[in-house]
Length: 134
Image (cartoon, rainbow, N blue to C red):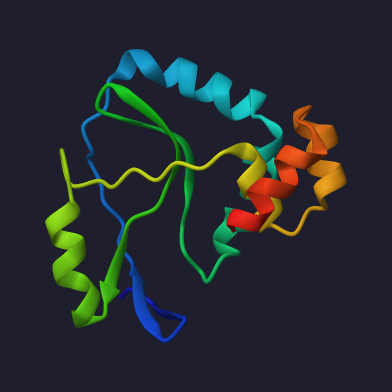
């Protein structure tokens, strides 16, 4: 039985999916990507691995079809007002892609502007502008 998690008053259930299409030739690359990792991925992974984020089960560097996705989680949103709009924007084999820069991820995790600038090599002014967008 799946556990219901409440995040911002919205019920979310972990949805394990087995037998996703996967190109076996990419498994080696995914394994190497997991070992290498960049700073933002590592910091994010520390926050979500072992079901530490609301009990949701994330995978890292998962092969899906002919792609390697950085992070992967399937959820069922138990909130009727959101369900219809989300169904309209599903694409491909039913996955949504969310992109974010390493700098934004680090800032959202509460890392200081100075530390993000140092880690990414970007000017502090650019990092401060990113922080203002968040």
